Length: 200
Length: 255
Image 1 (cartoon, rainbow over the protein chains, first blue to last red):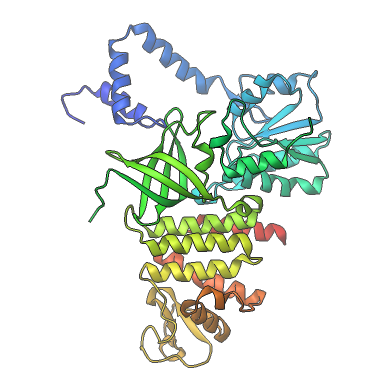
Image 2 (cartoon, rainbow over the protein chains, first blue to last red):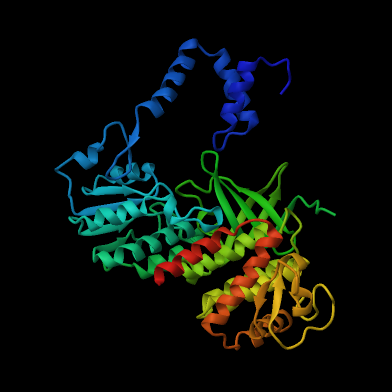
């Protein structure tokens, strides 16, 4: 970067560039925006980024991101103990919670198996899941990994690991999205929707 | 000469994909006639994205692409063959990962030929229908090595160039093929290769799949063939193969 640009500016541009989906142009735009914005915005942002790592941890039971360990969901005794939803990422917990229809607990894998990218089972919280189920009390595991090649591979691998425990294993149904358009649906989704059709 | 068309319509296999920006996906594609390309699928992660279901890994897709400054952009996508059986069987999907990983590492952007595309598509088709993926994998590996200019020398000694005799030999990745026992004497490189393994590799290198698929290969011979070809591939690529590690893990767990 040019010597005409002050070092603090280049430092922040480089830091932003390391974030996913942010290229050098966007990084520069964000940096110069912060330079012109009120000081309060930069200070709030800096404090929030500092707190992000300092004040969060992973729950030692479900591996979701939390402020306190165990997380509020694992601590909540009103929730069903016997049902676990298995998700790839912490944001997926929020998606299932938004339905308001699930009262069980979770297990966050922190990724999906992708041999091409070098992500194997040992990089995910699968061993911890098996130990959790083996410890007893879990009656049903609902696999809610993403419906794609990597999510499918992860689901199949988790199933292989859990079968010996005898726990009931289910997977989220797949089919047409609400508000979707049949004309544009791919053949795999339509096939799954046909296979999972329900009597009216 | 790079192709300068603004838009192109072609069959592609989606090799890799990663999330990009707020709702986009960046894809690495192997095309039928334009080599390996990167293309951005804008909005592919939005809930009602019409293209999303047509952008699945390892699927054969009829795609219309528009040339951008850095990458292509996906205009239209329609799945031609989803290779559904790969998504329902962990071992098959792991072999598909192995094929895609090899194609990705052997090809640079824009430089893959139509033959590599056809080899990948036919191998994915075979994976979906055949009971044993191991022969398909070895046939694919030999085919790809040949297309990349690294076909192993299996008929002449890689050092002395004389015809190899019908006996156990040595296989040396640095020398690019079989070394006869005479030339191997005193060398500290080369893996033992049995006569049956040499015969199967020669057959696979020269015969069409229709003939090769009928060859009956025992478990020990399969392991030998895999060990030899993976040693050669690892030497040529100078990298460990990630999908192979996962396949070995599945095999260990199956006992």
